[in-house]
Length: 380
Image 1 (tube, one colour):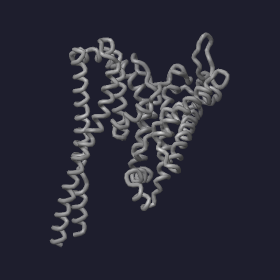
Image 2 (cartoon, one colour):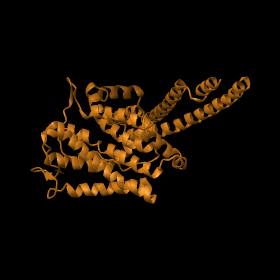
Image 3 (spheres, rainbow, N blue to C red):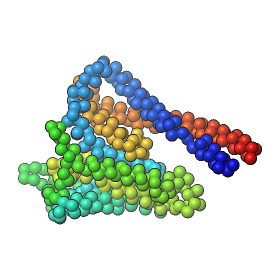
Image 4 (cartoon, rainbow, N blue to C red):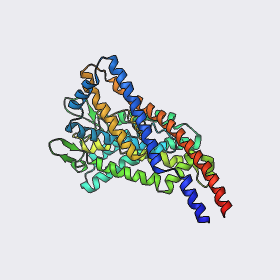
């Protein structure tokens, strides 16, 4: 009889997977519909028909060459999203991704120019250097949070400014940087060719960064780490119920440090697709800024799941690529930023709605379980 009772508990209490998937799809649908409605309102204000938008976007953004460019840019955004997502799983906002990635990729560029090893050693060396530098920098905010209770939001914002100043100081020509003849652009010296990661050629369309393959593998590792290991369990427990986790043997402060450091390690990978796979192979002013906010937004839209983050990164890149064609027909580029912000807001709101529906369903299942459990016990 105990076996029947155990089976009843498993069937009634556990949420049906199809129902859970349906609720998630509903949330995504609500968010996209709301964003589309906002975009339609903006276009109506500019007296531009949706057909014109579809035609322009199709001719300039959704070309085969455009997809290759979007995959390359989305690789960088995907890594930034994973760096933010690992922190979000413990309710930590690592806004320092921008500073961490800059220090990491700068260090990798300097080492890549100074050291020349075989490719099988050079590329892992550069990846290790970038990750360690970024992780060590993230550990500063982690220590302040765990030992002194300093908000990671404030500390990482300040550390971003410090990192920017450090890199600007070190990249000067009289220190670790260089300036080409007849140019005012200061950047690190050209890296050794053994540090150039081979790209994946797409005939007639261009080349996809070889680092994209590593990004996919990282996503698999991210899922395994957070869903199938003790670290993932303790991270979730410490984030959702710190006191209960402490009573269960998990130190929340230790998990704060570990989570922030892991987030920093992933942030160290953010600049490597461009450093190792671009045509310049050096660090300069061309590296993007503001990736912390992009990564946080993509992690929110992707719900901290590697597949969701990947789709969100592609969506974010697609919207950015639409900015120039829309500007050509009279729609300001800022409209894309409005749509991106609307998507984030809509996702947060719709998932709160779905969470309420899921909570009420769980209560009904619990009540049903209680009634059936009483009936089973009475029969036994």
